[in-house]
Image (tube, rainbow, N blue to C red; front, side, top):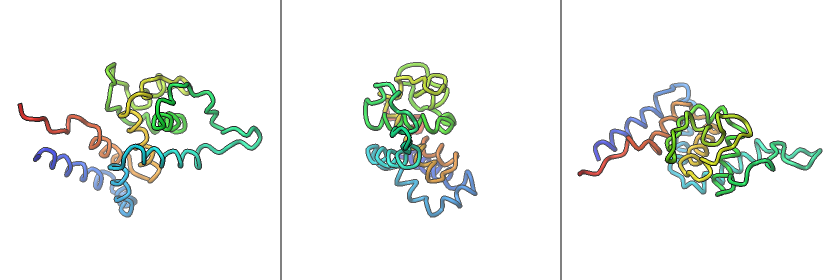
Length: 175
């Protein structure tokens, strides 16, 4: 219990102090950051889907198709609605996902960054199946996207990800 309390205090310190300008900008939004960190994945997915649909995926009036061309997404991205939303995030914000660690290797070699869970070597259009069946991968992508949209700093996002996904911070049961 003591280790968990120390971890929580460390994460809060990171969230508040790592980037003073970001922390001040987020001061009124801290409650929102925390709500996103603790919200169920289905709620995060719905929120991210709405942002993607309204801000990034406007239809092209000339062709009546979305300008991102989602018809070329492979079928495996439809494993779940969260997977589908996360692959769309990887498509519109690849540079964002490339900045963050993947906290799950899914039984294989660990990707260099989160983007590689969605795109082979980070190459646009070169989709891989890894993230389609990994709740950690698509959960991370959705959280990062939402935090970025609300103006969180990179330090705040790293702190939130470590709190949610870093297994080394979890208390080990006594032997």
